[in-house]
Image 1 (cartoon, helix red, strand yellow):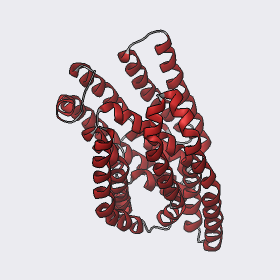
Image 2 (image 1 turned 120 degrees about the vertical axis):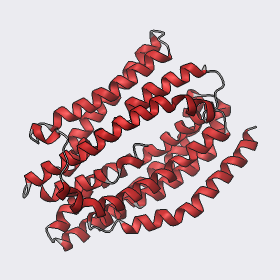
Image 3 (image 1 turned 180 degrees about the vertical axis):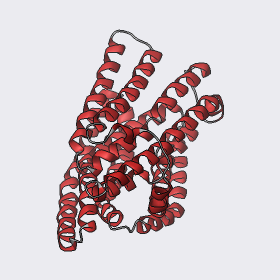
Length: 349
């Protein structure tokens, strides 16, 4: 939901801040205030919706085996309402990306993620229960958002973070943001539909195994994500300044680097999978997940090779290329995903 409702605003924020932060600070402040109004308003609506829809979601969608329904509803409410803070937090993250200060993002993410993992481990060591862990994770979501907000005040006046509405900002960015929103919606469907189908066709425990495998395979793309996010504001600034030769030269070098550097990372994951998954789960589960994880690695690598062309197309104001590509893929990827998971269910049974 957070990804779908991002509405292309984050990419728009990065592009506009990288091109106008020095030349037009008043416009940037109006932009952030307008986007803050949208994000915080959507957060409130989502929070209310999650609270009231949690019983329906647990009853009609999630396949429970060992968890009590009342407990599942409570967990969904706490984690759901706190996790959709990703919406306003994404705006603050995009502000630092537009300033090309990704070191701040990295510091905050490493600190808060490490704190979350450490706290979870200590709770379990001290024999805490599920609800202690849930409250801790929710608290870390809130803390992460507050830290981003505090750091952002170092670069922008305090009034920048007071939500407001400026029609000129909406008119200027509506076209670009709407195309970026289409990209986000299609991409979210492609990336999340497998988990939705797994949660419906298989026991919820299998969703946990699959999510772990998915996360493991995705780690090979950390370098790609970092580099593509770093070059996007640089691409935008070069295009804005008319430096086309420098833009093309940088694009080619970064694309070659990612294609060659990430291949060994993804190739190594399947070889480390059996001992790692056997340690985390069991040998049988490790064998069961070997082929799916290997296929995930291939898919993630192909996706990584497209990240720099995508950043380039968006930076030069041509997001429609990706919109069309994702739209056509809907008619190929989704049916294939459903059929493959359906046949895997019979194998699993």
